[in-house]
Image (cartoon, helix red, strand yellow):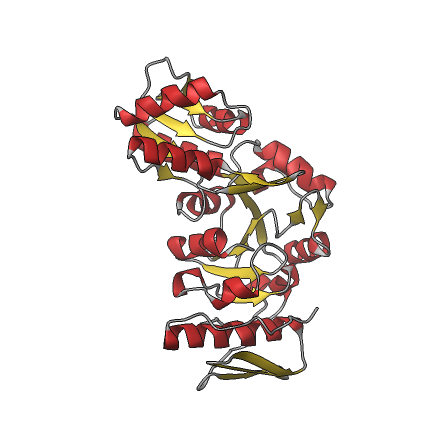
Length: 331
C-alpha cells in the first residue's frame, strides 16, 4: 500500500532521480509547472538527477535540452543507460577491454569515458553492447547476432519496447533486444530500468544516501525502484493512468502518488482501507464487485491516493483488477 511522509518529500529524501519523458517534459515541451517545482526543490536542498533509458544522446545533449525548457541542468546531473551499461562492462572486464558497439554516439562516448575500447563487429572483442540507434545498419546487426549466438557476452542498454518520436510512438530498442533474444536464445544483461544498474549508477555519480525514484511508468520507473530497493513517487503527467493503477501488482506499486512534481514539495498522508472503504481528504472511495465508486470532494492527489488504495485492496482480496470504467479523475 501507499507510504506516508510527515515531511515534504524534498526534505525526507536527499536525492530525486527523475525520469524525463512524461515527468519533466512531454515531447518537446516542459510539463506545466515542472521547471518551477524543480527550482523550488533544489532551493530546499534536494539533489536532482535526470535519468534516461535512452542511450543514444550524450549527457551534454540531454542537459542542453532541459536548459532550453527552463530546467537548470548540467551534464553531471544527467545519467543515461549508456553510462550504466559502460559501468557494467568495465566492472566485469576492466579498463582497456574491447567491446563491439551496436548503438549511437551516446553509447560510444560512455564506453570511452570508462576506458573501454569500442570496436566493430569484425574485430576481436570481449563483449557486445547494444543501444537505441535509428541508423543501425542491418548487416552489422546480423553479424552481431551471430557473435552473441556463438557465446560473446551481451549487454543491452535497456529493453523499452517503445520510444516517443515527433511522428508518434515508435518501436524502441527493446524490439531489437527481443529479436536478438529470440534468435540467439541468450538473455542479455540489461542496464536500464527496470533493471537495477541505472539507479545504482545514478546514486554513485550524483550522491545521496536516501534516494527517491520519480517516474510516470509503472513497468520501468516504479518496477526499477523496487529492484533497487528505493522508494518511489508516481506522477500522473505521463503514460500511467487509472487502469494501470487498478491492475498494479505489489511490485509495480509506488510508495507515493501525485498529480505532478508538486508532490515533491508536500507531505503525504497515511492512507488506510477498511473493508474496501477509504476516506481521505474529503473523498470516500468504496470498492467491490460492482467496481469502485467515489463521492465527496477534495484535492486531486487525495482522489488518486484513495482510488489506488481501494483498487489494490480489491486486487489483493479478489485476485481481479477493480472496474474503474465509470470513474472520471478530477482535474
